Amino acid sequence: METFLRQNYSVITHSIELLAVLVAVFCYKKYKFTSGKYFIYFLVYVFIIDLVGEYPSFYNTFEWLKIVEQSVFRYNYWLFTIFYILASILFFMFYYHKILKNKIHKKIVIVVGVLSLLISITYIVCHIDQFFKGFLPLISVLAALSIITYTTCYFIELLQSDKLLNFYKLLNFYISIALFFWWLITTPVLFYGVYNSEEDWNFVILKWQIFLFSNILMYLTYAFGLLISKPHEK
View 1 (cartoon, rainbow, N blue to C red):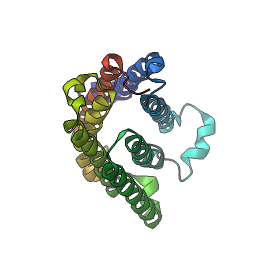
View 2 (tube, one colour):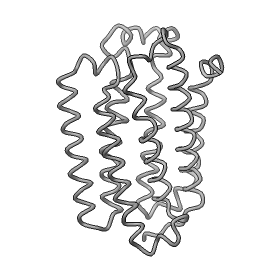
View 3 (tube, helix red, strand yellow):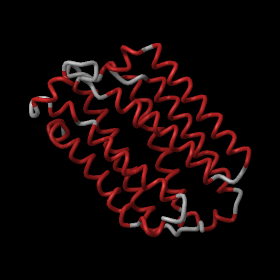
């Protein structure tokens, strides 16, 4: 398993992401008049960011990357922190504010999202050295709390509406359930990031297994939801 994950972790992860992206692009016409189109844009965006984030793997392949290797941007933690974690807080704040109907829930989403972003930015400024060398657990926790709050507001509205009878036809249900469990499962792992080194391969493999399982579950849920859901906005 260790050898298999070392050799194939990135390939498997990008492949399952690509599958979800291809399904999303294929289904775009179905959702182009709904809020689902914004989710499709974000899915493509995340796939591109994940590919760009592989740049440390090519230091020995492309000579021009030597400049990056010798700079503060040597590791890709900064990129994923800004363009995935913080971007997720921002995008899903926008997305859930758009799809939620209850005014109180909309306000909760905005307040939680804005506070999380402000605290995260302040924390980054105060820990700028660590920002470039590893993930900052507090920021991941804030992102998890934000997105779990967004999705919880959605689930409450769903339970209180007639849409509950046809929840399996709602794209936002699949998005919400996938997001909820992904952040709930993966966030605790980041607290043990200090063990994420070649000196402790047992932890590295465990982390890879957790993220691989979570990614497969999330992106397959996205793909399944995009295929079987019925657009309900006009």
